[in-house]
Length: 525
Image (cartoon, rainbow, N blue to C red; front, side, top):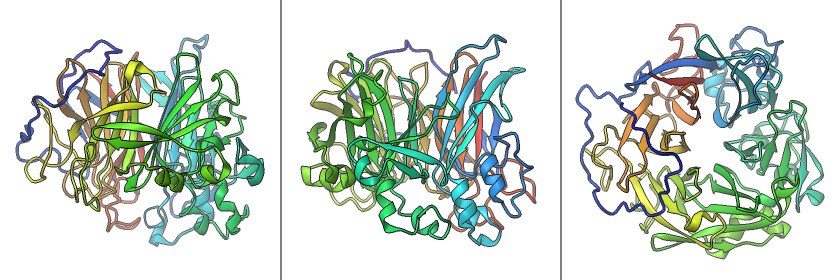
């Protein structure tokens, strides 16, 4: 792959994708380089390095990795089985001059069939394995490496004490035990990381016998909130911000208004999910800015969206999905990752597809299709609080040789299915991570790049293809070292695989080692 340099901050608000679309087969010659294999495939122009794997030490007392069986001590101290990149923070420069990063990873899933020998669940260990992991990275000998027992390194799981703030905190209680199943996250302009916790519908029944009161049905409303965390402060107590509503989220992105108020966009993790926006009432310098503000939901009107205001009462916040539907919200096809350009002029949305859709609309172009697509929204004047955004399709996914209605720009060298995560690098390239739920029989999941700018549709290529059964859990970037970080989720976890019989044993490929979710670095040559 050849990367082109673009000026950062290019406004895409006036970009039209109506012209120059093509349903042309990308340049992929047999044998298909996009087929999922036992090993991964690295795109031209990159070297791939392994940074952290399931079982690597996070805390200084971490024992050696031994999944036969995984123990609670390992879960508490080691890098977890699954992961989605929630944020990459750059600390202030140190006196020794060594570049450093703090990486935050959310762990939504710990499937018994892939984590425990014989598939025999151990809820106590699983609850401690899921959650959030913060690790320290430093740049040594020309590459990024983990710091065993780094100052900020910690694990947050089902037993972590959290604070609840905002309108719903009083009736639910000011404190709650545990962060359950966070599925997404983002770094904020004001230095924190936001995590999209699940509503606990999968985790609470599983953990009912573990403790912490999880068997009590009254616990459910205490999960499903945006959790704010300060990664640079290892003793920071995670805060559940109830003003942003209770919902399982698939994507989060944060920005600020010109006067400093936080704005958070997020998506509902559902095949017919909604797109939401929260606008804070006060400046981000106020530590309680996310505790009051205005919630709204998107309604599709032709190829645009109009923001419909929602209430701030407790019933609305706790029952956010129902309130949004009643207000007239429009569903998107499995809306997921979000990305915002540096100038604030364009918001991107990844949709994984929805085979149950019966009628297409201006921003969901196909009925009965689960290949997915990507939408861009032009934000007028870069004002994230504007009443409406203009939308357009920038990619309609699927194999051009077999799927109907696919759209790729001329010059594309790859095709993809089910886009899930999005992020923008410093060269103004959109990085797309795909997630087919482990079913990589049609094509490998991977990280794909889309060039932005120039007033034309965007040509895509692949930077990385994951092995069989793996999905991508996001990307993050360091321009100084020309490194793109990626999360390779659950390799080997095809629909029929198990701990004993995985589809691959990547990255070690050793017969006694299970496949390991891995943070990789793609270093530009």
